[in-house]
Image 1 (cartoon, helix red, strand yellow):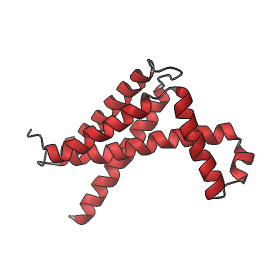
Image 2 (cartoon, rainbow, N blue to C red; image 1 turned 45 degrees about the horizontal axis):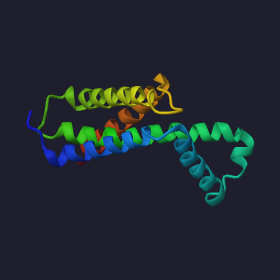
Image 3 (cartoon, rainbow, N blue to C red; image 1 turned 90 degrees about the horizontal axis):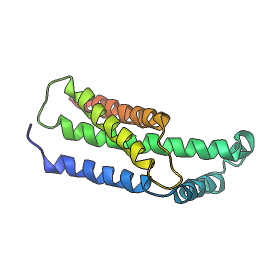
Length: 146
């Protein structure tokens, strides 16, 4: 398999971004998602949501959606990188999904060594779900164009 730097460089950059977010101590990560929650409440006027669900549940939802979204993008990028060169059909979904799942698992393992953070199997599942949806969305769009 010939490696195309033009398609793999965005994957490596995005993986580096994920790594940097994961390397933040729990306090910094919590502050970032708390700021996003405040923005949602203030700007988009979702004021009743924290009152109905509770701030803690909304905060958790925002954090898990961030996992899903970041890995959705990774799924798109890895799919594009592995799709170059017309590999066999099974590799078009399984290979990028395996790469994303392996990275998600290694990322959660990495978090075991970050102050205040913990590695969670549920996060790997959320990450993998985001990656799978990104892969399937990209594949669907490419099939429509063909």
